[in-house]
Amino acid sequence: LTDTYELSNGVKIPIIGFGTWQTPNGDVAYQSTLDALAAGYRHIDTAAIYGNEESIGQAIIDSGIDRKELFITSKLWNDRHSFEGAQAALEESLNKLQLDYLDLYLIHWPNPVDIRDNWQLANAETWRAMEHAYESGKVRAIGISNFQPHHFESLLETAKVTPQVNQLFVNPSDLETDAVTFNQRHNTLTEAYSPLATNRLLKVPELIAIGEKYGKSAAQVTLRWSLQHGFLPLPKSTHQERIVQNTQLFDFDLTPEDMAKIDALSGVAGLHTNPDETDF
Ligand code: A2P
Image 1 (cartoon, rainbow, N blue to C red):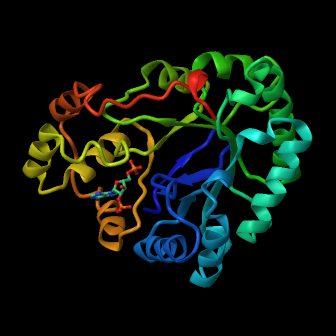
Image 2 (tube, rainbow, N blue to C red; image 1 turned 90 degrees about the horizontal axis):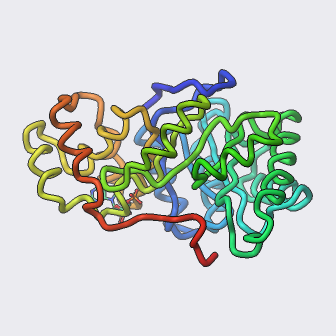
């Protein structure tokens, strides 16, 4: 769990992160974050819109773990796509988390409904604020989330810093091949949110059968598949035994044949996100 990928700016990032989307603020976020840290996670992924930054921040402090050993990500929500908005949003996240700096800050969505007429300019201005924060040391790395190639390309027209991360909904059912290839071309790490497709993959018979060969669950097979593709999975759980289970991925290797079988499951969970058609 302390193995790392290296971002394009040299910053090291633990190869699994603890996902916290849909984890409610309060006791649940607090306790599950403590459980994750006790299980060895050193990378926690949250976002302003998740509403749980305060409890996660408190758990981080109470864990007693040295800040320098942790990698903390948050994301800017859709109502902050401007230079000033992004600066204020970062300060709010830092305050809620009780941190002096973030390891990674992401633009959550490229194309919120409110800026759909001028998302290119809004993203360029937002990115300028992210670059300022990066240069000032308030964040160690900056990136994007849910950016398809046309959003990414538009950002690059004015960006001074190429996004170091693009966090996508990528899993055996949704391979996001174009976006992943675009990321690779720009030396941008692909993080995988909801790597279990919000648990829809766990009953897929092919994944269960492959898992039986290795003595692993469908969840573990799916997370191992993500790692073997070079993605950084961010599994979410609020149950301690699952939090632990999702770290036990380093005592087996999926064969190339099994990787190909899993790739062929594309579409099986019936979920896909088009950032140009969201209603938020
Ligand atoms: P819970 O939080 O109740 O443990 P994703 O990371 O793709 O969004 O998936 C999260 C969902 O999958 C949650 O519903 C979570 O449930 C469930 N989950 C996470 N890890 C496991 C696991 N190892 N086994 C079964 N369900 C899991």
